[in-house]
Length: 328
Picture: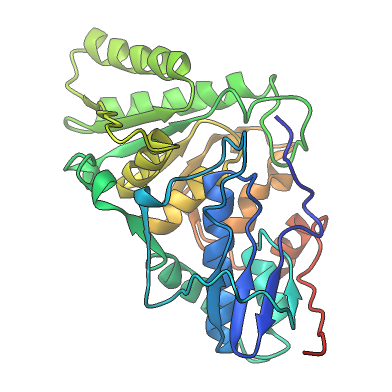
């Protein structure tokens, strides 16, 4: 699936007086939207602005990206939700990467370091949103000591999107092969490890789950694989995706089953800030993967990277944050 928007000139933040307004595209995945909101709040904190979100929950006919507001609770001390505030004074871009935020904020905070910005970003991210009681009641206990395996298949594995973002068909076997090697090593070396395996593709999830369970059985190892109970009694849109997200965010570490996915990044930001990315084995293309754009705020394969020049290089194909001042 192609992204329904460009990575240039996308959603806008408008500022009126001391209130900033973000317009999240109705067509956008949960991880994309949430990272945009986190980044938006970081900018507002540094500029002493009050953040206002008016389109996160916008529902339009045929929009499969609508997330029912009954599933989520935004921090009411941080945000306001007033659709009447739309006048613009400053315009920013959407889908902010930490280095883009840093380069923009340097104009207002010239002594700010990238590491300081990244540490504040991580702290702020954990106070943006939480699950509603409907979701909270379904999150199993004990996930804090569990490896979360996030598999994507149907929409994140294709040959038509930008190779820096999407997993090419030929790349998936290498990623899964090395993910399974890692899982087998965990099973071999740890006592009674626990796993949470998630995917939007149930057949793919069941296939990988069987491979992992069969390996444990064949080697007389005890493992525990969580099974999430999806009981959407209120028929809320994207209930399973939101429940998966908050379960994944509870895990001690996330193992990524594709090259890049905002869902995993956002879950790590709300959780332990730890990801394992298996595209590293493709030494030729790994350095260009957009995963590195989050390595200052998420520990990727055990490492945080605060190299400003490298972050700029990885994101040099994406526009910087642009500000337009209007007369109000």
